[in-house]
Image (cartoon, rainbow, N blue to C red; front, side, top):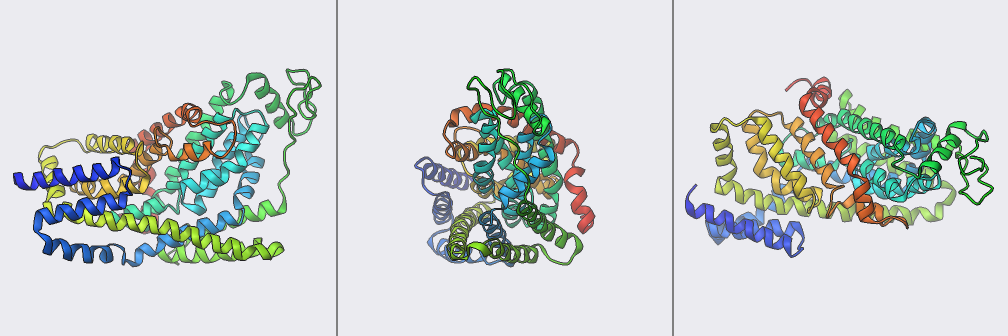
Length: 475
C-alpha cells in the first residue's frame, strides 16, 4: 500500500470516529466515511457509481429475506404472550431447585430467544414477568435485573438469531450452518448461567439471607407451612409484619399450549433445515406465518384488540428491519472502500507471513469486539469489523462458522458491560428499585460465566461445528 492510500484510510477512519463521537447514526457514519474515502481514492465518477449501485447489490439478496421473517416471527410471538407461558412452565420444572426462580428466568430467556432472535425483545418481555416474580420471593431488584439482562444475551445466539444472519450476509457463510452452530453453544451458555445462579444463590447473593432461606423453604415445601427465621410461616406470611411469601402459581392449560407453540416454532426453524424440508429462508417464512396464525388464535376471545396488535407488530418489524438494512447499506459502502484500498488483503498477507498464532489473532479480535460492545450496538460492531477481520481469519484457515459463534459470544458480553450495556439499561428502566449502576455490579458474575463459556468453545470447537456437520455434512 502506498503512503497516499494509507493516508486516505486514516482520514476515512477519523471521519467515521467523528460521526460516532457526535452520536450520529452508525449507518450514516459508515456510508459517509466510505463515500468520502472513495472520492479521495478514485475520484467522483467511481464514487458516484458505487454509491448508486452498492445499496442495491448489498441488500437485494434472497437469503436476506430471512431477516424480516425472523423479526416478524419474534415480534408476533411476543404479542401473543408466549413469554408468560414459557416462564410459567420453566418455573414449574426447576422452581424447587436452589435459586429455582433464577434458573427458570434463564430457561425462559432461552426459550423466548428461540422464537425472537432478539436480545432486547427477550429482556423487555421476560423481564416484565420474571423480575416481578423474583422480587415477590425476596430477590434483590438489581440482582433479579442482572439475571434477566444476562439471560437476554441468549437472544443473539440461540437460533433464530438475526445477528448470525447478518454475519452470514457479511461473510458469505452458510446461514443454515451458522444457525445450527448456535444451538449447542446456546445450551452451554444456559448451563453456565444456571450453574452461576445456583452458586450465587447459596451464597446469599440474590436476597437478604434470612428472607432467602424463608422463601426457598416455601418454594421447596410447595405449600407446606414452614417456619421462617422472622417468626412467621413461609406460606402464610409472618405475624410480625414480615414479607408475605406468595404461593407458587399453577401452570394453566394456556401456559402449556403457549409453551408448545414456542417449541413448535423452534422445531420448524431447526427441524426444517436439518431434515432438508426447508431452506433457512423458507423455514423463516413458514415460522413467521405460523406465528401470525398463533396470534390470531390467542386473540380469539378479544378479537377487537387483534387489528391493533397485528398493526403494531408490523410497524415494529418494519422499524427494526429499516435499521438493520440501513446498517448493511452503509457497511456495504465502507466495505467496498476498504476493498478498493486493498487493506484487508494486505492485512491478511502480513499476518500470514508473520506466522502468528490463529488463537492469538482470534483472542485479540474478540477482545476488541468486547471493548467496542461497551460503546456500540451489536449490528454496528459486525458491520464495522467483519469486512476488515474476516479476510484475515479466512486466510488463516479458521472455520468461519466457529469464528462467527465466538464473535457473537463477544458481542453478548458487550450487551451487559458499561457504559452502554443495552440489556442493562432496558431492564433497569422496567421496574422501580433498580438502577443501571446496581445492575452492572450484579451482572459481573455472569460476565465471568460468559468468558468461561468462550474458553470452553475455543478449547472444544466441536461444540460449534458438530451439529452443522451432522445436518449438512462436513465442509
